[in-house]
Image (cartoon, rainbow, N blue to C red; front, side, top):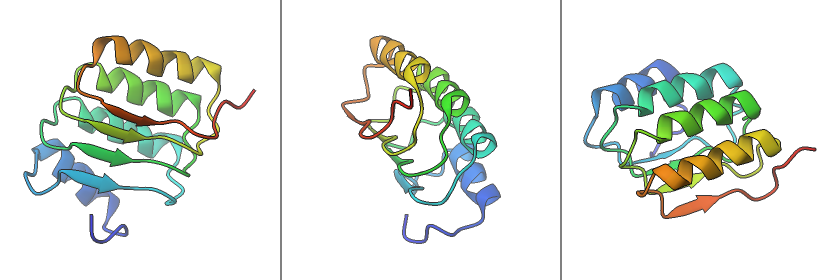
Length: 117
């Protein structure tokens, strides 16, 4: 995405509508909170266009990452996911691992510097 600062509601609308020009989305370092990541997860459930999503260096706490992992169980389009530097804990990591057993489209997953114990 060329401009990271596009209105949040517009991003959600484009994901929900399956905007064919939105195949890669970089939302890194935006300070996204749990509510926003959860909204994003809900929008991803039926999206069949987005192939790459970068959520690194946000406030992705366990509940947000767990919501995202549940959404990705039914999304078989996303290939690259970066959730590094979000400080989530072991519970969220287990949910991501479980998701990978069901989701065969994710071929690249960045998890560096998480696992808040």
